Length: 275
Image (tube, rainbow, N blue to C red; front, top):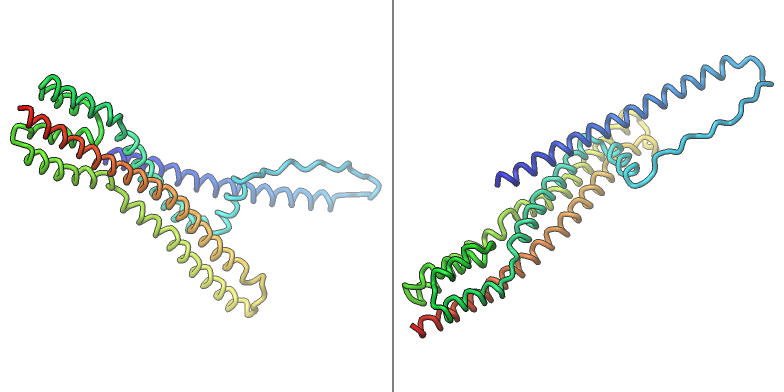
């Protein structure tokens, strides 16, 4: 859990810094545009004769691409409010990454482990060796096997109860943190819709102050309303894709746990009959 909070903290600091950088870049660009306009105006006023024709100066290539577009729309949609949607994205991705890493580390060669445990019990009759194999293997399946093997001397019924009980614990561990992902999936579009309402209120305030309903007056508020909703929906879609992938991995892991548990009970039954 400490690793999760560390990831969230780092990503939060990164997001805050990125937002501040975007705002600073926008302010710098606006200042440069104002200074350029002032210099051009002074140059026009100080021109003495029309005979002096200056060569056209090539404009510097403007920054283009997806980053430029996203940055512009982020600022146009009210950077302060859009930051909430960005934070929901960062926190949701933090939990998604944590779950993906956990599930990836939980995958082991289960067939090889079952084969080794079966050889240790049925061919060698060495219970301690079988327990060592399960103990030294990572993942929930190995943990379930170890709990079952520790109660092998109490009988097959005790092994089955232990495996079922500890299997439920491991299944709940696989789903840990998924509720937070669903929370951020729901929060992102909700924040977007909240921005829509705020943008509409802003548009009506502008109409009231101007006493006019022209498109120019309401354009700013409508832009905030539409952009916040757009970003909220996009964030929800991104997190939903990761969430569905995590659910698919959990279902596959759960099915593998059940299948491996059946194999363990068969080995235990053969071992008990052999004794």
